[in-house]
Image (cartoon, rainbow, N blue to C red; front, side):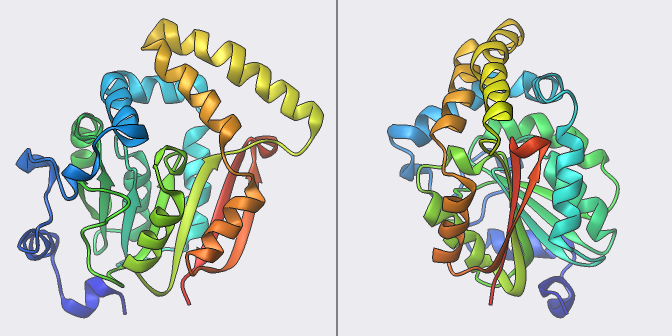
Length: 270
C-alpha cells in the first residue's frame, strides 16, 4: 500500500497535515522552507534567472526541443512505474509539466506534489495544473536540498531538466531518496553529452550557437547562454549514476534519448 492509501489522506488533509509541520504551499505567498538557505552563489543566480523567463518558459521548451520534451517526460513517467493511487513528488517542478504527466499516471485516487524554489515558475504553472486530469496536484515552494517532507512519504520522486541547476547534486539525490518509500524509484530526466563524436559535434553546434540565438530572440539571452554551458559542465551519464548510488539508490539504469543528448537515470531505494 502507498503512503497515500495507508493513511487515508485526501489531498486537502495531506496539505493541512504537512503545512502544520512547516510546509508552505505556493498559494500562501511565502518563500517556502529553507528560504534563508539561498544567499548568493549558484542557487540565487538560478532562481533569479528562471524568475525572469517564467512567463515564456513553456513556449521556449517547445520551440527549443522541437516539442520533443513531452515525449521525453512521458517516457520517464512510464519508467517510474507509478500506479493508480500512488503518490509522487516532482522536484524542480518549474511550471508543472512533469507533475501533470505524473497526475495522469496516478489517476484520480493518486496525489502529486510539484516542488520548486522559484515561485514565479510555479505561479505560471498553476492554471494548467488546476485544469489537469488525474490525481490532485499541489505546487509548493520548497528547497530541493532540504525537502520539507517526512521520510518514506512518496512512492516515487522525479526531477526533469533541473538537477543541473541545484548547487549540491548529491544532496538533492539524498533528499529524493529519503522521501520515497523503500522500493520506490527516483527518476532523473536530464540533458547530457552524446557518446558519438559526430552526434556530439552536431549537438554542440545547436546548443552553443543556435539555441542561445533563438532563446535570446524569444526571452532573456542570458538564460540561454547558461543552458548550454551548464550542459557542457554537467556530470557524464556514468558520473551521475555513481552520484545516485552514493545517495543510497540501487539498480541504477540509464536510458539514452535523442541520440544520447537526453538521458533518463533511474534508481531504486532499497
